[in-house]
Image (tube, rainbow, N blue to C red; front, side, top):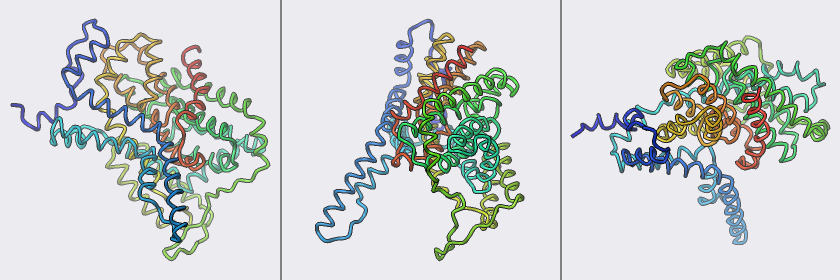
Length: 482
């Protein structure tokens, strides 16, 4: 009998433990792997239910509003005071995209416990799953969204926007071209956070049409996904394979970076041409958001904020640099984050309120995603490993829409003896498809969390897909035809 601790450590089944493919069909391989480990089918079924749930999230939000409205009307007719409905709040919770994978991770945990035992479930969740990326995103998103960092980024981009007379269109182009490229240096989550905050202030607050809002969101997600490929340390899908495949920054820049920049410029200008009339019309509208909103003390009294001194900005940039430099070492960047929170408290007169809810929700989303993703290697690896270059690119792009693209590249790194062209095709496909859905790229949930209030509280997956299709196709052309 296998000891409990050894059985727990053997879950999930290693790819090397499955029988060799031996030239059999993909269906035969997957069927055999389910026979070897029946829980594979259960884990993947739960994962796909969670994916379907993300597409239905907006519907839960609508139902929550309807239930609350009916409840309020009933209470008013009875002469009472309306109160939040428990059912409505529950439906609203189910409509929060950021919590979906975490909720289904609870279901997965119970399933592992039922079929494999509590020791196995405990070992998998605590010792097998790597939570470094979710923790990193929480920290970098929080620091990047502080007033000194946003003001610094806005000041730098303002110099570029001034060339276009600082119109909404000029800001729109500047943020969507330069901002994503910054992701190669300050990390994609930080770039997404800054771009989303600036777009909120300089564009979304002007109340553009629904079509333009989703086109902008799709363009932002795609541009950030490919904009992190100029270096080998800033984009999650690149980080997963750079050391294993021996890719340095010079290789990334020449192999992917130049074409990524070209795609970003062409896609942004294409959308500008399509929406130029509406973008010009936004010039007459005044923004209402204010990054310099005052803080309130413990008595609820607003305290005026002072201009941010240069030394405070430098310290914030230093904390961001520390976090990026130690991105693989949670003890170091979390320790630095605690010191940062103390510094932010000491310099509160220069800070806007630090809201941890958004970053924590995004981290929870990513944690749920990696919990599910760790049990999908049994089918993703043979799908990727049995394809030639062009089908491999297409498959990586498609699979990325339903998995975090870092997971796709990581699983590809486990496939032995991959040709260099196949490695490049996987990376190109993974970053190209990174804007198709909210779950396709780790920074996307951060962008959604910061901008969801402009989309009636929830981004509709189908509209996001439509908004991202054009820049995705242009990225395909840049990577595969140029």
